[in-house]
Length: 416
Ligand code: ATP
Ligand code: MG
Image (cartoon, rainbow, N blue to C red; front, side, top):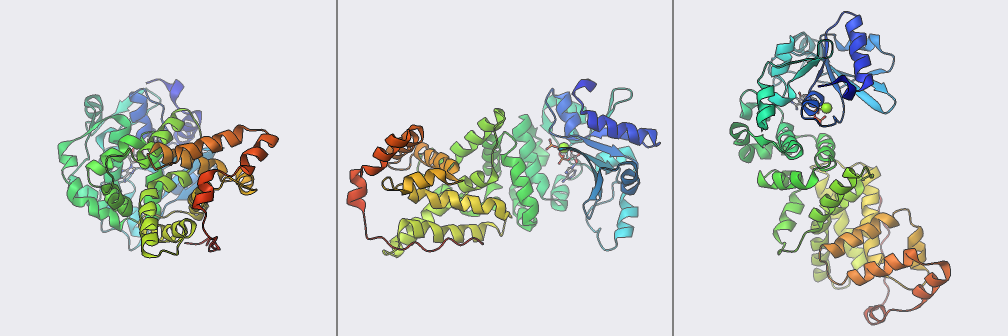
């Protein structure tokens, strides 16, 4: 492992702790990834300094977390996370008195700190002063063998923190590792515990699962281990309806992976729009079958509200993502209108590009009769002003025949 790949800022943090008389090591994902020849996503530091002591050493430092306080040292956009060694006391049963909790938990040795982590390959420490890796848990062997092994009694460790199940899947997908049979066995039975995880924490975890560059593989593993249904229950049910068509969700996940590989931006709004599209579409169809008066626009809106209301009970979705997500959905039926001033106005809509991309995705996933519409919008975007006028003044025959009496669309509600 060479220092060249270690973040300068992480080295700065370690040096300052060291100069103040504390121990400090790189730990966790960065050590694992560097040993595998990968580029770490971020750098974590473990130290015997207490959070308050860390805070005193850095101006750009903030203490976060309630149960376990961590220090975040910020350098522009990079954050180095500094965690104090913790003892191997069970995390369960802690939580009445903050003071007692802290005395019980902090003040462990490096070895104790290693054992309270999740997987052996995440419990490796790197000493930058003598370039050695400290391995108390057999992490190096597991790294070599490509094995994810949860330390301790796996069922108990998943019970302590069910998110570890998602982390197992995430690392298996990202690293191409096998989950050790003993760590794998409890997943089927304990998946239901994900229902107890706070929705806000699951949202953070979902972003890591699906925006880490390995979304397709992650998705397959989540379904394989029966965990997906606890995250997106409505989507799971809708997918069972699927009859061999390549699904929109898989397309979206593959596109997300490709965009991340090319360093292009991805947004949770688009991702969630795709994750919830199948249940939304089926529910909108049902609504229209029950109520003949209901138009496509209204059905999608009502269904959207219902699907979102159920989903946010599991996974929080901040407004800054749910609002654009619903705009992407709401624009789908509007993209069918090709004549008059509307298409040109839609082109100016801040969400047009996302809605158009979503339309392309629907076509690629085999939704009926959309390819020609996609081509039309592609052409319209490439056209000059005069050409655009001609394109939108021509009334395509299907618009004429399908035209119904216009109903006033219900106002779009902004809250869920
Ligand atoms: P990534 O590449 O996603 O950053 P990571 O392994 O660094 O992977 P982090 O979430 O950054 O994951 O956590 C840093 C380290 O903290 C982990 O490597 C692990 O040692 C420990 N850790 C994190 N979450 C848990 C948990 N839920 N239970 C036990 N240990 C954990
Ligand atoms: Mg990390």
